[in-house]
Image (tube, rainbow, N blue to C red; front, side):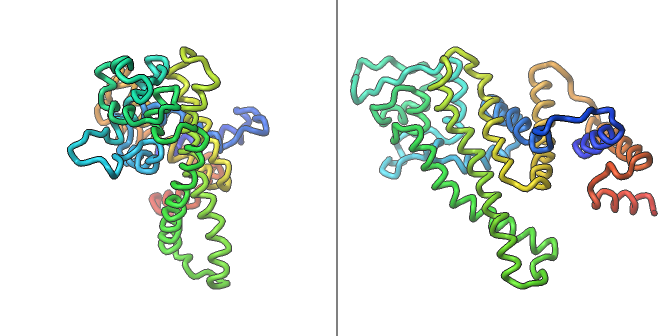
Amino acid sequence: MLSKSLQYTYHALRQNGIIPRMPWWWGSWLLFPISSAQLIYAYLLHPDIFPKNYDKFITSRSTTYVNPKPSDFSDAMPWPIGREIVDRIEILASLYYPEFYSSKLHGRDVPPLPDNLKPIQPVLEIAHPAHSKMLCAMLHHEEPSCLVTYTKFIAKEGIDALKFMGIVYTISLILSGKSRPNGGITTILSYAIPEIFKGATFITMAIATSWALFCGFQKILPNKFMPISRFYLNGFIGGMWILVEKPNRRLDIGMYSLRLSIETLWKLLVKKGKVRNIRNGEAIYFSLAMAFIMAIRKNQPKSITSPYIRFALSRLLGE
């Protein structure tokens, strides 16, 4: 509700001319890249405050980079689980992206790993000797080419994303009562298939680009230049794939991610001691959000763009 109140307040301020006319590139599509920048940063550095379902969603669709245990490894052989690999990205960044020395080439001359990198030792031991960076050796140990890994991710996860979006879209059609629109199955398919492909492209490319930029930034940026802050760029650039979606979908996804971003940012500030949790805080900000929405409804009802919210408010007020 807080994010909705912010949205309607913005519309009201635009209509009153308080917010000036923005450049052509300014729009609701920016909500997702900006939110994604903060969310990816939290995903990598502060998993304890990151939404668990979102964490599982990203990690489960990133097996090209977060490699599962090889099938020829026995159960007794150690192998880092998904989160253990993800957590080492921040450690490697804080070490300024160290070089990789393959034990296959250098034998016992390989420098020992610090204790906080020991969990990924099984991955590095079997990594391709052509790797030059430890981060790349950890994320795609079998394939030395970062570009090939990127394309493999798209091919593999793209299929899963199509299946996922197909299920989601079918459920949404059923729930919305539009499973049998006028025109029959041809009309359904002509509308649904492009939407499913757009959604699958957005999910796949946003995640793939965010992962691939770990490798890309190592090649174009000095190791000591923004070693950890560059994670924000991973999320922002990856989030720009929201542009493949329709404008109304960009807004819906952007508002959802904004809510998660605000929640995560607040938890991060609490964790760092910048602010304190407010007793009954959820009730307070819900009340404030409703106050803003009711004030906007009274003075500028057209700023409330959602017909569902307008209908709910009318029912609430008995109109």
